[in-house]
Image 1 (cartoon, rainbow, N blue to C red):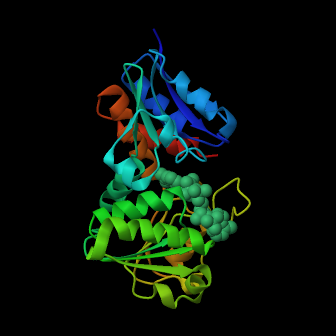
Image 2: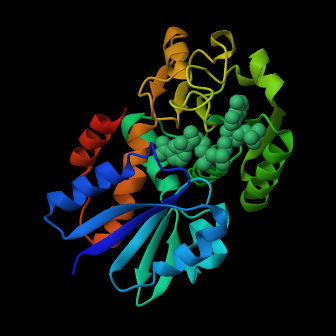
Amino acid sequence: MTKLVALIGYPLQHSISPAFQQAAFDFYGLDIRYEKWEVEASHLEATVNRLRQPSVLGANVTIPHKEVVVPLLDEVDEVVRQIGAVNTIVQRDGRLLGYNTDAPGFVRALRGDGQFEPRGKWAVLLGAGGAARGVAFALVTEGVSRLTIINRTLGRAECLGSVIREGAGARVEIIVLPWEEAESGEALSGCHLLVNCTSVGMKHSPTEDKSPLRGGALPGNALVCDLVYNPIETPLLREAKKAGSRVLGGLSMLVYQGAASFEMWTDRKAPVDIMLKRARESLD
Ligand SMILES: NC(=O)c1ccc[n+]([C@@H]2O[C@H](COP(=O)([O-])OP(=O)(O)OC[C@H]3O[C@@H](n4cnc5c(N)ncnc54)[C@H](OP(=O)(O)O)[C@@H]3O)[C@@H](O)[C@H]2O)c1
């Protein structure tokens, strides 16, 4: 019987996960199909219940359902309890188990591709949505000493700041700033790592071709990391290179979080090089 893995989100038109996950299943000759299930919020519960069928191995969950899906599952791990968001579901004996592989995917990309050791460093996050939550949690777990969170909607950044502060205690200095401060540039001066966790610059979006920060506001000696993966060189990364910074794009993180999901569904080592190659080829 052909097994299924679903991708649940809305919209899914530009997602490249189906391409690189299917390439990984095909590499091992597994009879598994990765399907897009484009669902609006009103149908989410019924759709999640379809995952209990024996033919389903599990699912990936993406925007906008990562947070609202949590109470629909039977069990979640400690990372999900801390972050409050699920991107991977595994089906076992009709029970749905929720995990979050965004945080480990980010850390693997940061250490491996970015050659960056977070311990004792000062990191600045732009954004306070689901992705920022995962990245903030990962950075604090990996021992950053200072974390600045900057978001267009200040209340959302404050909320994320309190959640992280509660979990991390006095180990980390958490600073929350309004967006205008980032644009002044002074707030970022001297930071070691800047991570764009907003969707600004994403192809096919209203902010395609835009950078979340002007070149003059960028820290010169930091590693600048963009979670946006399409295009590979985003406007932010282009500006950062001009400012003399090292850069890290979002594609490796995307593939690593997918590789971790693949390993949970199949108990096999993910063929990361094949997944990365297919991911690159699939960008439109
Ligand atoms: N590479 C990867 O593996 C990976 C993994 C996860 C996510 N991502 C990418 O990360 C991005 C964010 O995802 P998410 O799940 O966190 O989405 P989300 O929960 O919808 O959050 C979006 C964030 O972007 C900000 N934003 C949106 N438009 C903006 C604008 N015009 N100016 C300034 N800020 C703006 C929002 O600010 P407000 O709060 O003010 O609305 C919010 O902080 C997406 O592009 C997603 O594709 C990549």
